[in-house]
Length: 297
Length: 164
Image (cartoon, rainbow over all chains, first blue to last red; front, side, top):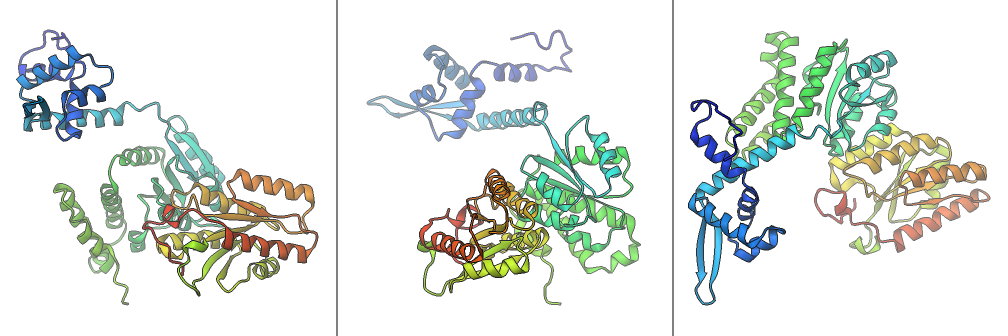
């Protein structure tokens, strides 16, 4: 075993951790486990083909060690000619899940080479310039002074759009509708001097900032939205809705909200989404039903 | 496109972007056929609203977007760029127009710009209004009777060949 843990205390680094890390850090082991997780029972030669440059000896040794640890399981499918299949055991599937988590973690935290693009759209040049200064050290910033320029600057590279709600030509609301209807995988912050009303619940933005926006506020919202890219559609909907409801609760008198049909409908939807996120099975449809406003009135 | 139409009487929609009322009349005249309906969006905002609404109700997207670059080329190009950059409408067929009143050099510049933004074809360089209308008519015939466009399923949620 490598000495990555040096002489660390046993309670800090128990034997169990040392042994599992040692298993995962062996050349080819994670690859073999992932191959078996994807295939439904693979033979020796299947593995050899998929793991292009592995030598026969290394593969044989790896398979027998993984068997010893009960991670994989060897079954003779036929005797004559001898055909053997390898599968992940239940234990092996658990390990594969750990490998997947490691891969996800790496994807989130090691991709600092990837540039994040923020588009700032506001008809007030001073606001654009100020926001640009605040963000330019961390992100690639594009700017637009009206709705049309926003469209010109928008493409699939944009991670976050900071949209002024009132812009000439095309308003922020209209640009937002465009972004959503075209299925851009882009988070949108609506920035405005107006106080929010219950109508924001129907709008497809992710966050709402009331102008004037402070530097820390803007930076933390952008960071937060870039992290939201990791969530699936449902997770983002949940977080966006949570922000809107929190904003309304902070801005509007409680009595008015208690009686508001839309507000209550969306509160229920948030609860549904929340339950749904704790138990992944698809209660999404019920949640969507609740979202749909009654069109009768 | 002809192959996708299922029966007589089906109508395809054309969205005409950026034409002045006068130009819109000339262009509509050239586009005129029983099976083509023309929807005029004079400015960027209207065009974007139409396309956004059409994307929400899949079947109501136009079969062809015609971009008039005669009067306000920048606006029509904005719409073209927005279509091409969209994850949803990237393959929507588009044609650019420049009428007979625009000088040749300027026409060339605009057409070139349109191709840089991803337009699929253009009509320009007519000598007079009649020549222009005829050219549009020829383009319409070509576009609706000869061309096989990418299947709508490329930009719709569900594969669908129904036109409203």
